[in-house]
Image 1 (cartoon, rainbow, N blue to C red):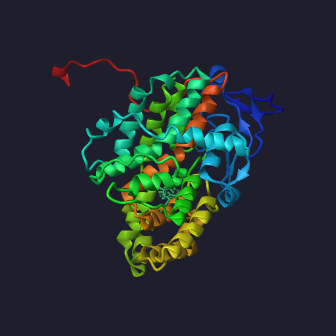
Image 2 (image 1 turned 30 degrees about the horizontal axis):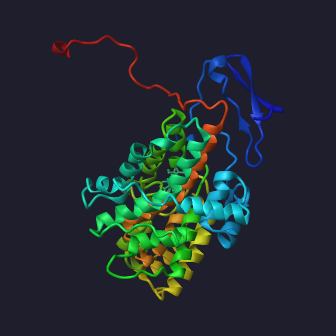
Image 3 (image 1 turned 135 degrees about the vertical axis):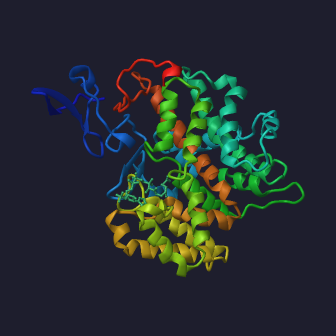
Length: 431
Ligand code: ACO
């Protein structure tokens, strides 16, 4: 971290404390409070980390007011238009766009790691058939540390690199196996001649009884969905991965923790929840009823796919995803899909409604991704696993960045204690 040139002053009980202020490449200045507790004996209070920078990072930048998302400086719109998911994986992991030979080498390394240990097949069979694929994935990804002992040493850069490649390569295989298991079909082995996205579709939809030809439209849409979810700065699941990793836990355990966090409906689970909501609304005439419910604080209901902690103008990923939805549904000839009609009308009404406008609640990326995934033939239970596959590269890039830091510390937040003051134990007969 560069020496800070600015400082802020905090006055507390008549004493003043100088707090260094760091200026990032982009974004607001950051007050450095690391010495505050030691010098002033106070903590800061920031539940939900709305004003806290928990780390330094050079990977992804988001400007929520401008609706801007940059990976290593490159705008997501440009990447979506010109790049591919695997190229973005390289960019996130290594910091620069690859040359043609670097990309070919990276692709070949990923491709050669797509199979999972054969004994893992038995491990899958221990799950109930009706398990949610995310439940299976949390277990199986965590169990990778029991299968790949030669990439567990986090202090060895080579082992960290192998773990990263293994994770990016095997997550589609694991998610597809979780799906196949849930529908009672045999597992389909990866096919190295296919692209990353095409191979995933193949492992999900091929059956041994007939040939499966990957539809290039769906392959492109899948690639784009993966790219739009690849990384998103210090979101809940990424922060979970970093916190788990800060204790020295192995990378497979850390990614399993990230998957568990992603599953929640306020985060990655929103794509499934959003599509279920659109189905529940069913027809355009029922939208006002649901909008009214979303505005009623006592209902506990939120419009899924709307709102974002950071984007307070628009979600740039949603803009690209919306284009993809129109394109894919048009090309598949399902553009009169009733869900799309409901989604479009809901978006129109919400964007002109005072409640949503004043609270800056815009459709997020998950608002449209579910419609595309359903048109492709995925059940709603696979939406969040697809998010998990896509985000794995972001998690592992952020984990590698953290582990590579010289002064990396275990994450250990403090608290504002509001429990009982110290008191004496009371014998059970006297309570
Ligand atoms: N529907 C209705 N009201 C909403 C919604 C919504 N989707 N989202 C937020 N609000 C309201 C809240 O009730 C609150 O109102 P108040 O100020 O009157 O109390 C205000 O907007 C601010 O909401 P917070 O929950 O404080 O905002 P926060 O930044 O903590 O939450 C979140 C962001 C979790 C994404 C929220 O907007 C939400 O629950 N959205 C629905 C779930 C969703 O789509 N999640 C996906 C996120 S994107 C991703 O993970 C890829």
